[in-house]
Image (cartoon, rainbow over all chains, first blue to last red; front, side, top):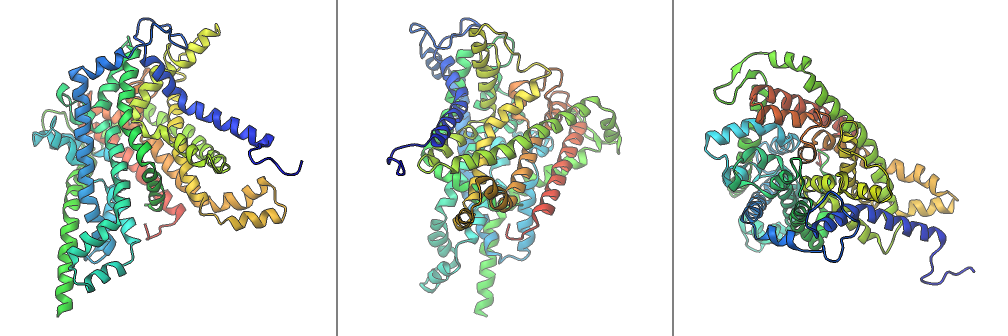
Length: 279
Length: 292
């Protein structure tokens, strides 16, 4: 038969599809098992592959979501991640614009400085940062947690990279029409950069929501614990309440997974813009 | 004249736009970074002020078996992760682009692990896969076979590396897919006309044209493998007996568990020098393009 039926698959196609499904199963396996563990209350070290009908319960989730300590972790993570994201949305487009225009004296040096700050791993700044913030009385406070990340050099570079690609003619046209420089930025360049701002938002939010080391070293009180630190410490010690731990892990992953499902095109576009930053 | 005032006004506006970000970067990145370099030459107990002791910390470093182990572990992570991530993500990228209708869905599926916070991924793998009640061990039990202790000293680094591969493979594959989309279709079409096989098309078109992406992925995965921290903290706490500890983790331990701020800074400083050296290699290999 020369012509395949429209929905017909060759043997090679079938093999590829089976392989694709196998890979997807490998990606999902840890989630699926986490889900399976989370819907049963911990009572033994033996776990059947599927829970018995009587064992299925959402008690782990309801207990966590009514537990004041756990809710406090969620609230802390929300405050931390959204403040860091908002800070970057305010500062990065402004700085990125100034760098893209290259009108400042020493603009090349300033650009290289931001690249250098991006290359500098922030993990090596932690000891002096901790000492400085504790002298300023900012350890265990939200300002102390948020300020070190409020301008991420990567966000500035992403904005600059995007704004360089906007032709100058748009702003020139606006100025001929009577806009001043500020208006031409706020009415033309900024609205045109919405996609890049979205890329920065999802990138920074994901990063801040998942950050562990900074909250770990800059907070040490129960009241300031964020979700990533709290959930990690859930699984410490000899006995693991696997049902509750997995329920907590699932709740902690939901915000970023939802964000990804809704805004996935900005995640992918970030890779393309990011690929240009070879630093 | 009008031109000069316009230029001045532009300078003022641009300066005002850049200044806040610049100040924050100086205060929260540059100064602490420089201070780490300085502090690495001091003895600095957490209560009290740093005392300059010259190169003593670096001499300690050379004889410190914990440092040797952390350095060895870090290099071992790199040796495991870099080849697997680079070759694996290229293979995955080629596999994904071979699908037409399912491509978007496959991209999303394989990016998904990257979306989950790292420390939570570590907990899911620790409890859900590697523990006695993890998926693998429960299946082994069902089959009447002996359980595997994934996180004991002689497997722990491999187990952590496996989780890292699971997390990152799809992300780097998307990097390759972005690179693949830049190769003109006509190259492949004329190769097919000339009778080139799939393998020939890969080695004569895809591989050479993807070389910049391969270099980029290699360097970025190298840097990522040096920065391993969160997964170690959440999964093993550096143990058992230091088997999974990295340079970064050791620096954290010195600073926040032993309160040796000076020596902790020395380890962080050495880590910084390694990352900077890797960046220099990257610039040298890829070429220092000024268009960022």
